[in-house]
Length: 449
Image (tube, rainbow, N blue to C red; front, side, top):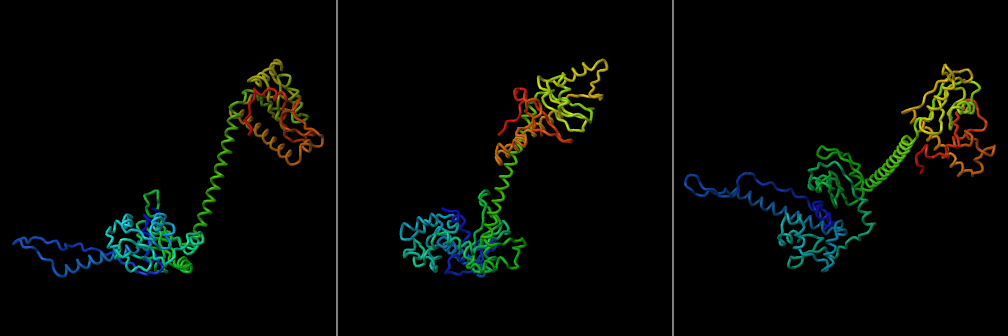
């Protein structure tokens, strides 16, 4: 059975195009004692019910019976109507068995109907005036009138239904079908009311509904009128096709946001992995920070020549005109300290390391400063590689070599950041040595993807 079957309360009194019935109010029973006789407290005689009270009781019973018959009529009009029947797989299977006839005993197995009655004679009576349905002579079976053709279950048909359906949100969660029907029928002939339910919370009403009117014009009039509230609650009204377009756009936005979030997460994880890889595997004690350098007539090569007397210089970070530089030595752990200690040792009794008359101060990078150096170095290296790859793809390998036909690298045999042949004052220079490439076990960088 489809969800519509369990949700049959969504049927409207005008579900069939041929019947226009008014919704009957559900009668309220009297709260006072009715026809149950009681013993007289004095002489034991039975107390008699007054004619007025008896009349009320009869009227209430008749009203209840009439109400049940009316609701049965509405339900069957919906079950076999243009909107439900084409998509109701259970009923589609049933009507194929016997020229469209369906046993009333089968219909009474529907929960909604069983709550009203299982008496097939009552059901037959309820359907006797229907112009949409037929009841057989022995009043045990029902079918849709063969003269009334069932709409083709096609995309075009359902597009037409959607074209004259309104989405309304803002109904109170305890609203009933009758409440909604009474409200929406003020604005036009209603073919169907579908109360939207939340399957995750035992099919509780979500506060919104799809209202199908006879014509598109009725829908537009309802959407554009000044009625903005239902029992004090604000309403949102829009055509169903506009509603689905909005939902599709929201879905696209969510998917795009999810993709962007996943991409951002992936990039962040990659950056974190790269950073942690660099900081976790670099060899400590290899970077010597010096200050007090002469600010004139000093370049990278001069700094490298000066410090090579004390250790194997692999890389220099220095900007012209600055009195500071970072010198990376190659070798074993703490080789920078050993180089500086050697420089101090060879400085004489005063222990001052002098360069062109300037006293140098030296300190080995540690902790966060050391990690930052390696992170910056690795990032610069990755950026350089990316630029080279882009140039190679865009212009070809031969055009990457510049006017001189080759790159000039810091150090004796290359391996560091690219440095132009002609150095301009103020340029930052990062010099490397090819010996670093021959000793990969000493410095490990993040894996390249």
